[in-house]
Length: 73
Image (cartoon, rainbow, N blue to C red; front, side, top):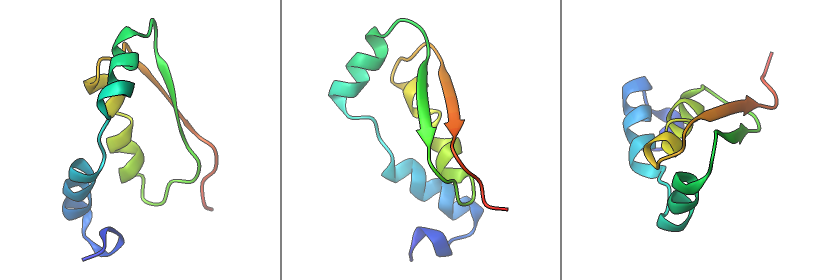
């Protein structure tokens, strides 16, 4: 099943499994002073952004400033 064809619960579960912060960036996030900026160019359903914006926090970042560049009307 493709993620885009899943219901909301399945989509979030698949994203939690697919999105990770690798060891080297995680170390940099933990060492950074202050929040990080995480950019999403064009969210589809919003679930990818919702899950991805939590990853830096789990990796040790002090905070996350989410920025979405565009939305569909």
